[in-house]
Image 1 (spheres, rainbow, N blue to C red):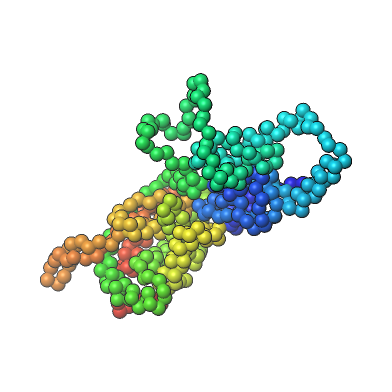
Image 2 (image 1 turned 180 degrees about the vertical axis):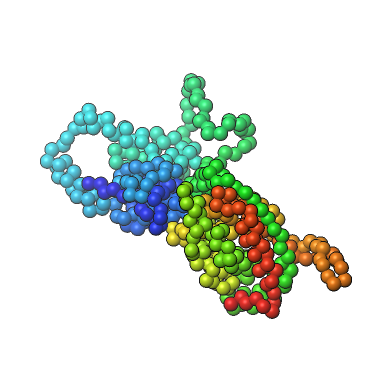
Length: 418
């Protein structure tokens, strides 16, 4: 008898998950704890391990389908149950050979022609005709291992026989159809990219965005980092970037102006007590926003360590649900790839998001006792997007002014990294 596996809860507040990719197909044998699917929850991708050793019987959820926690996603015949069934079949066969009935004859071909998404994708990648591949699954169904074995045998796909032209249906598109040239490439939307798209559209549709910016003279900060970075690298084993200095100024300003650390809750505004800093981390094909919890309790060194840890986990696919939960304010380090000005989309339900842009040398007019002079200074733009239902320009301006003051006061003499 088959056992059902359900969508697990991969985080404290996670209520649903999206099967971004099945790693198995019906008929595949799996070991206990072997990954069977990749699941996306709250922009983090995780693998679901099998709870049993046995044979996958049926996939109940399609790829890119979102289901609630606790919903059945597949069935598996446990190893012991499978062996018992085989023994019963052998006994029955010895007692009396049974000829297939009309009902049984119908089952076999229908099972063989039912292909899992993984099988179809693999066959398309190698240009294979699935009707020519023998199946070893239940009812003759073709499994992923059957296709892999067929490919390993260096079988050449049989040429397709020309058929009479049939009436073709136009592909269904959710956006206006555009001409696609022969040399264009259409890239399937992955589960991670789909989640990013859905969240960004939802934020822009539901949240009234406003935007403001200040420029900051960080010349003394640059000198501070230049003086400390070599010793820090030798002692701590990681690079001392500018990011933890901005993070420290940010969390201190959030303590001064707690209104910014709020969320829209329909009929109320929730002002969060904990300062949990969400940190945007980009990989080659996705964007993750892991969280540094109680960031205001950490030193510049502590923030640097935590940011480095989360960035490495994001880029190696090891982020957990706990790493992604509970953020109250997001900091986006767009300056790391050369941006000097941006308008970030709010990470809803948070009330604001800050982009730290690239530090650049610019001629700046400075006041001295002798009068105004032009000097070359290291300048950076801080760009803030705000939810205008929660925040107004006055408090946001004060928040940015607080950050500006703290950053411009950082120097070699008075700023402690530890």
